[in-house]
Image (cartoon, rainbow, N blue to C red; front, side, top):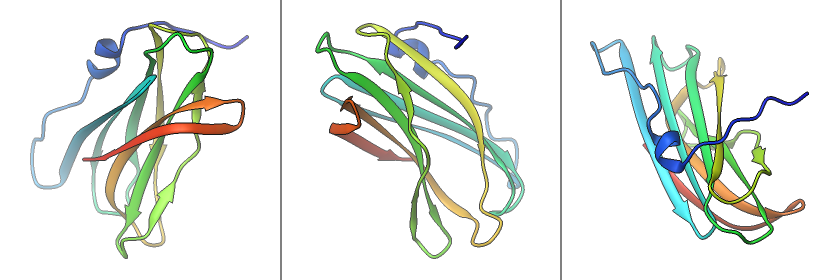
Length: 134
C-alpha cells in the first residue's frame, strides 16, 4: 500500500532544513510556482562536490483541474551540464501535496548546483512547469 499524506504548500515549504554551520557544510532551498502546482526543494550536505546530498522534495496541487502534479530534482555538475532526476508524481487533487526524502550524488563530475522543477501532467504529457535554482 502506498503511503500518502496531505498538506498545504506552506507545509511543503516548512521543511526541516538545517542552518549552515561551517564551510564544509552547505544547505539551501528553492521553490517555484506554476499554474496548478507549487514545488520546493531543500538540501543539506557535508563534504565535497562528490559527497552524497540529502534532499527533500515537496509538491502541492493548487488547482481543481483534473490533472496531477509532480516534482523533481535538477542538478548541474562541475562542467555545468544539467541532470534531470526522476519525477515524483502526486495524484490526490487540489489542496493536497506530499514530500519525498532522497539522496543525490554524482561520483564522476560532482554536483555544483541544485534546483527544483514542478509540473502539471495529463497522463504522461507535461502541460506546464516551473524551475528554480538555489
